[in-house]
Amino acid sequence: QLQLQESGPGLLKPSETLSLTCTVSGSFVSRNTGYWGWIRQPPGKGLEWIGSIYYNGVVSYNPSLKSRVTISVDTSKNQFSLKLSAVSAADTAMYYCARQEGWAYNDVLTGYHVHLEAFDVWGQGTMVTVSS
Amino acid sequence: EIVLTQSPGTLSLSPGETATLSCRASQSISANYFAWYQQKRGQAPRLLIYDASRRAPGIPDRFSGSGSGTDFTLTISRLEPEDFAVYYCQQYASSSPLTFGGGTKVEI
View 1: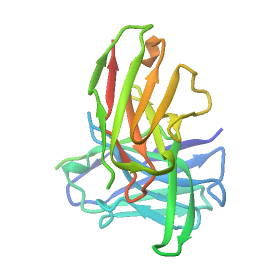
View 2: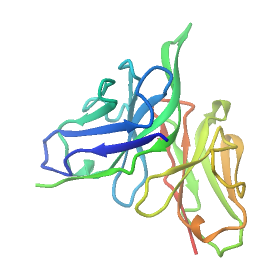
View 3: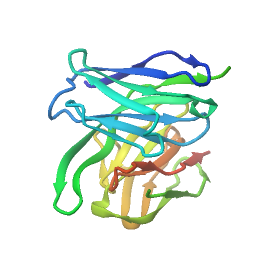
View 4: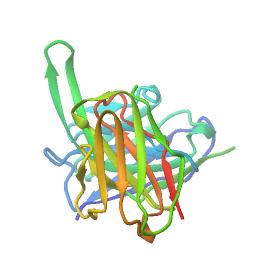
């Protein structure tokens, strides 16, 4: 049974870099096992997709966060990671990792794209608070 | 960006009743790339419906999804006590970015 577990510091100061890791068990981060994503949820608010990565390192980011986000994968450890730079109080949230199906394709007119599907397996989440 | 607007914000119902939740997209959702999630307090979201109307594995048949284009509906028949939660819609027709609705709380 596929399980995801987030880990990382729960308290940061403004301007620091948030670093979280998601450890995958019950499956492998490899070809044909899906894409691996990060989603966050501020206290009492809705869900925001941060980005998703394939085993080969191809990444899709939310444009609103792209300038501060780096998502990477380590298949040897069966993990993928999130870094968010220059955090502020607005980045205080529960951070979830999750799995989704997806595929890459080339459009004759618009070029290379990645189609991502719904998130079918979620980690329990980890709370990150940004406070001075 | 495709904006999803859920209504109502809160739905007050009793066990045994039927809940009808709506989600409207700011532009047409191709191929019905649309999902619904349930989130209980203190838990991660759980996928209920994908491709607008397909139930995820293990989801009871009292949960059903419908709709196309810009208007989608989640119907929960014969509400059980464990169904009282917050429900989110999500579109995945566009990955730039993937977006969620603001949520509908179903309360007793």
